[in-house]
Every structure is written in C-alpha cells, then in structure tokens.
Image (cartoon, rainbow, N blue to C red; front, side):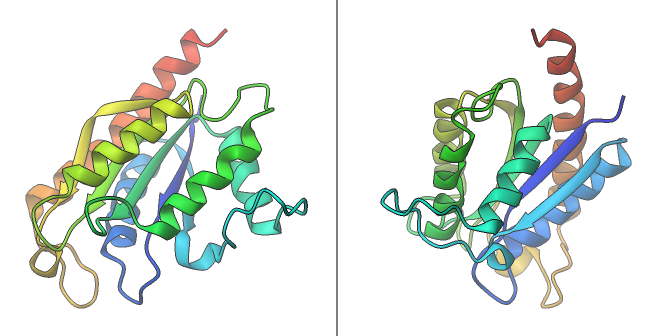
Length: 188
C-alpha cells in the first residue's frame, strides 16, 4: 500500500536552500513508493495565525486536508537566529486546525526533520522542530539532516554539491516512508 508523505518547508526567499533540500528528500520518498505533496512556505503565503479571525484561509484548508490524510511528513526550515524561521513556525501554528480530527494533529505520523544553516548550528532548529512534533503528537524519526554552510553546499542554481548531505537527505526520505508504513500497521 502506498504511503502519502507531505513535505512542508522553504523560506521567504528567492533561492531557498531549505526548499531545495526538501525537494531532494521528497524525491527519495517518491522513489521509495510514496505519494508525495509538497507545500512551499513562500507559495502558501499564509497570514499570521490570529485566533480572533474565524475564517480559515483556503491555503490553510488545503494544507491541513493534505496533512490530515497523510501517513508522514518531512519538514525543512532554514536556521534563523538559532531557531526555525517565523514563516515556518506560522505554518506549524496553523496545524491547530487539525485539533479535532479523528487523528488529532500529527497522531500516528512519522516526521523527518531538515535544517539548512549559513553556519554550523542547524541542530538548534532541528531540536525546536522535534519539540513541536512531540507537542503535536507525532513521532520524529531519529535520523535528522542539518546542512551546514549552505552557501558552500549549494550552487547558485540550487544544486546540492555535497554528496554526503545529498545521500543523507535521500536516506531521510526513504526512512520516513519506511517508518510511516510501520506506524500504519500499528495504528488502532
């Protein structure tokens, strides 16, 4: 049975290394037999979550419907000031819409984590994402991919020059598919 994997990531920039990294991991998930859907933070153009506003934007509805139906996710954020980007965190905040689902939030879903950093501190954002996964009742797969010094790792066209990092991203994509399949067999 094919697994559905949803990717969420990118940045509000023209050349998002976090989006490029996510695309590599998602392609590997596809090659592993998963159905995939990718949500680019920049294209989502989400308004800030405002709990006073009762109208849920169409982009949020589409994203939440896909996540509600998925078996696993891959998240990818740039490192901004020691944590995830504000735009990425805002997308995660909108997952509040999944609170009343049959499987609330990310219950019974595996989540793979990627961070791209201009320096070497990408694990700080990975740690933040892992806390959020747990808060949303999901399971972060143990394999994570922080990519350091992205200004060297990617060329100007967005091609990853670091073969080791590429192999790690591909491994993460396959691992999310594998673990999602295992969870599907255990779900009650």
